[in-house]
Amino acid sequence: HRDIMAFMKDHYAGTEFDMTQGVLAGPYSSPFRVNGGPKPMGAVPRGIFSFVTAYSTITQTGPSKSVLWYAPDAPATSVY
Image 1 (cartoon, rainbow, N blue to C red):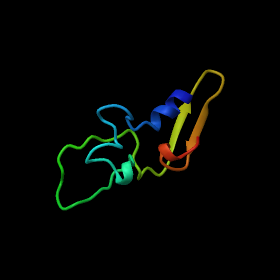
Image 2: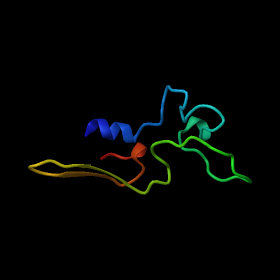
Image 3: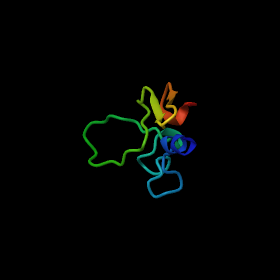
C-alpha cells in the first residue's frame, strides 16, 4: 500500500514530463498548473493527481480483511 500511496503523489519529478518545469509548470515551479485562458492549448499532459481533487482513496482487499485508506484532499498534499 505504501507504493500505491507514493504513486498517487507522483508528479513525474526528474523526467521529461516533470510538472514543475517548463512553460506548463504552475507558479513558482509548483506541479499545480493554472487552468483557464482565452483558448484551448491543445493536448497538454495531465498528471496522476490534480489540484482540484476533493479526496482520494486506496483500497486493499484480501481473504481475511479489507482496508481503505482515505485522504481528504489531493493525494500530493494529504496524509493517508
